[in-house]
Image 1: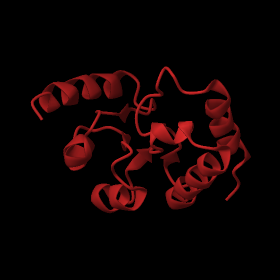
Image 2: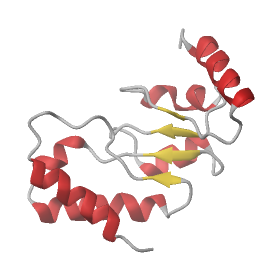
Image 3: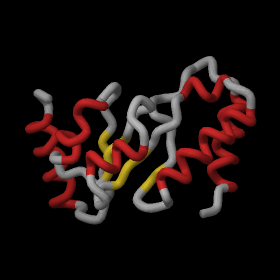
Image 4: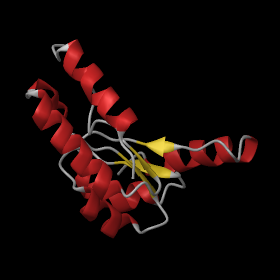
Length: 127
């Protein structure tokens, strides 16, 4: 990961000036880089949809926060599939240092009502 030394420098400068500001790192298609991403000093690593929550936690350790990781293509599916997969990830995240999100950006052609349903599903979730 060529950019890691530079990313570390940026993160160190941010942390020196704003130590309480959490920093989340996301790199597209980064499944092979999780451990290296965590070594940059970030507070959370964003998992893309190709890495399961269990694998991410195992590889990053229990103290590293994780963000993600719903496959954005799921938002084209029927609402019951969106709900099922979203809730599965929320269960796997266990509410501990987990920010629910897509495992990559939203596609421009995603039906708005499905994106809204995903958000509402997340808001309604209780552990």
